Length: 270
DNA sequence: CGTATTCCCTGCACGC
DNA sequence: TGCGTGCAGGGAATAC
Image (cartoon, rainbow, N blue to C red; front, top):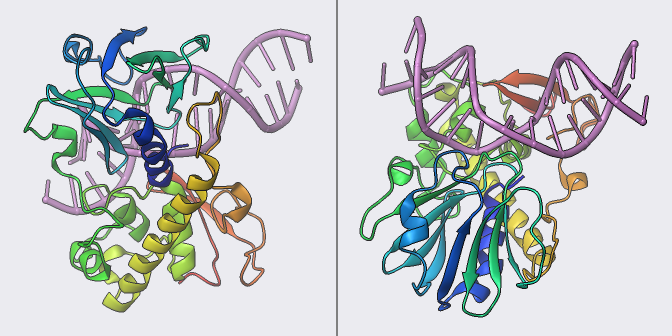
């Protein structure tokens, strides 16, 4: 499923095919994904030149002078640049045809994704309250430490709160907490500054690594497939409940924390 | 305000 | 083989 590294990899893969191109046509096969697709997407985008494609958190913004298309891949969405003769498949909800003849196609079986509109100079409400980028300059251990004071929720919930820091989903929260040796159950407000420094470092390291890996397998976006490059066998904790801890061999525990399946090592993570 | 719960949707892995 | 069931997930909406 697309997490921040997959979204960033998607952005990087699409950019060479989209930058500077003119949009020839927009085809909406479905009027809604998670929310209704606003009319501007179909009425304003055709004829526009693509100034660039940006990422903010797990959102992608396709910028034009008329405004920006705001996309989220949800958990099953994908964007591909395809040759014009590639047949439409199930769940191919939106086509954005380019002047090159290629088509930017949005496929999303579960429709947790969205396609919305952001007028020029405005910030969409969905982007309004987002926290800092984990790979940006303003995210570090002190940020987590200060944001966590007074919080009684488990640290895993804090880490996945997009108002605190963006882009850390269930997989990377589990992996970062494992790497930092912090129990996901620990009360966020009771964790030391030093331990948050370690956690922030691990978040950055793991996300950066995953982006590097994704980048190697998603190079060619003009192709019918291309799976995300973060392979399951590289995960230490996520999805491995009941299996031995890769560091100490103890049986990894699994429980539901903040409504999400969570795996951790009861010996390594305190 | 912070925290917990519910819901959206479909594909897939199960068990019978 | 085919059915039913439960689960997965981001994050907004809702409830406390």
